[in-house]
Length: 312
Image (cartoon, rainbow, N blue to C red):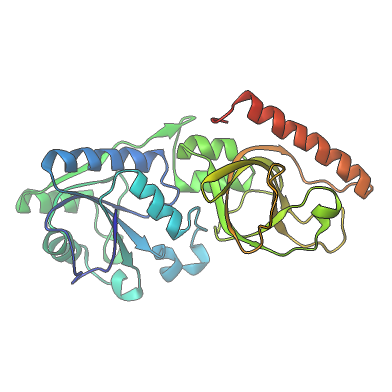
């Protein structure tokens, strides 16, 4: 997949494409339904499948106090959209100037003039252009005049409610990583570099890797059954998120323990896949009591991955 950056006057734009536009945070099941349609139609027409995303999220520029924390890093979004079969990903650098582009100009100069859109697939609530005045009605009117296809796809529901990035954020913030996984079709993944900590885990016989997480959304405090990806290998792991209350002034940390790994992880980039929250973070009466709980958590991890090897 080729990644482009730009807006009006974009160089190296496709000559023709089937496209979709959105923020794609989480690239959840609703997004995936649209992406599948884009991919299928692009293959049928033998032209490029294009996803267009705003970077950063428009609210980070227009209403920073209302802007949502993002589930995915830009790197993760690129990787997932590539895995969904997109040929091109275009990031529109969002700014106050971008926000002033009228909806009609967005369609005429950008969608038609710059991208050569033959077919466009979006969600039912898609809005665009200055003051969000562009909607499906405007798109359909333009499509009938300029002879391109516009279609909105039905949303995907779970538990009687629409799957959305906001629902995924809420699930993660309460620690329900299983529900987040169900809505995304894959585990939530935290990505970051291993930084030095105080070495308390090593003293307990469980040397943890402290992660400087790049994701803005982090699951609620607690202990999780996870897998940690190091380069091309996946290791079963236990991950603790929180302030480590057994120790005074320990501070907030995301730390993961790979019992089956030996070696130095400092400075390396890890990806932690969250499968299950097994307990709250607790304050123990002593380091020995904590050590005993770590042993129980380790057994929970072994049992979990033994039950579902390769597909937790």
